[in-house]
Length: 95
Image (cartoon, rainbow, N blue to C red; front, side, top):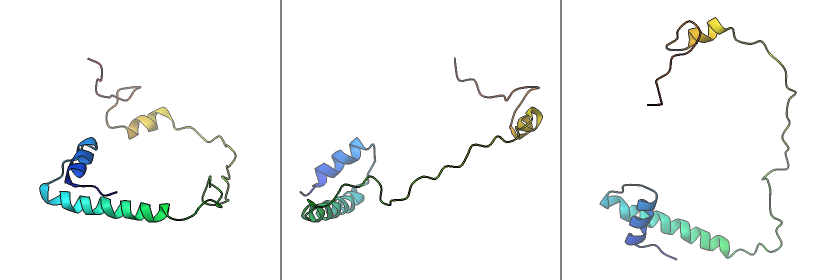
């Protein structure tokens, strides 16, 4: 399957991309290379290959949860850009 100029323009529109006219041919060539590569992969016989869930047999090794000291309010407020006595000041988001 090959894509043409109109296909590239449609794909760019769907992806909300603005392509300059000189980039359309470059993008068309790039997409066609990927499609050629996918056709080559489809030609490989994979009927005897088990599907993979993960690329490696490694498992997640989780650490135990450990409680740590909390940040005091004054120190936390000192890290913020704008605060009052007890709270961070943020821009109003509801009109």
